[in-house]
Image (tube, rainbow, N blue to C red):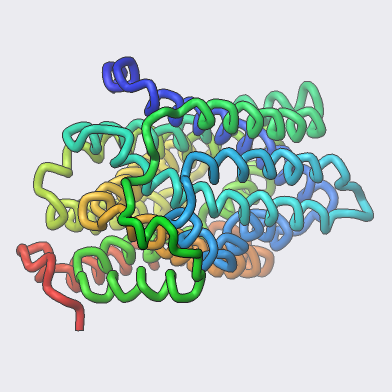
Length: 409
């Protein structure tokens, strides 16, 4: 993996940009969660911050996918990263009478990030050789997990020592660095287009419909897209980690950081593990996605019953190791199966589906936790994850048997 980074300058720059950007995000998110809990004392408000980091992405889906396929992806990422600097600085205005800024600012950062995710995911096959695709995705998928682990753990300590405002400023600075790194990428992040395609103007709704029509015509692509969205149905468990740390284990920002760090460590190791399951192509990837979802749910069953913070951290790590592998494998599958001219729209739709299901899951989990406490809600949502995984393995059986390109009915 390190050898690939050493010999591929452009992947190294993209990797570096994601490292600093995700690091800043988690510095800000730990501080933001702690600040909102202090100001509101509300489980629903804490879940709302997480929803603000997801649901707005769904609303801009028609724009994000079309932009990733119609515009130069490198320039698009640079411009959007620059705008995120301004969005991140709005967190400095949050106070007792302006809690709404926390939700609005987090939503704005998320809406902008929704342009970056499909653009970078679609670009990876253009920056590496085909034989390096799994390794590149393991590296980039692991970045998110590593930065959750490092950013969440260090971010909690940083906020405690230097204050939450310092964390918000650090987040803004990382977007500047990310923009500068991506600007230096030399290899085209989009494949060459035919003359008619290159000059076509962006048509958000029509472009989105074209991507959806392609997914409906390919059962393998459709099931790969459903993998992340199904995972999102039970992701409300993540919204309760801060509540579990503060209310159940009576900790502060440091305890929140430890649980998020365990989540990140699992998400770091999962993509590395995922490389072992790519040899079988899309059928093997679909099988691994199903079993990954099952292990994710089973891990959170044990989190719900953990007697101490240490036990909870251990099982959160296991759950997100499986989730990280599932996420990375479904991404690799889509990069293999979808042509570059449609890849941005497919990834935008994929991302939109998981943000929608995740947002609903977060809101429901936060509301139920306010009435029942986090433990029974964790148990319920982890059961949803296990059930979804079993259903997924059942409905994908024919494609996993090799009928991957049969049109969906």
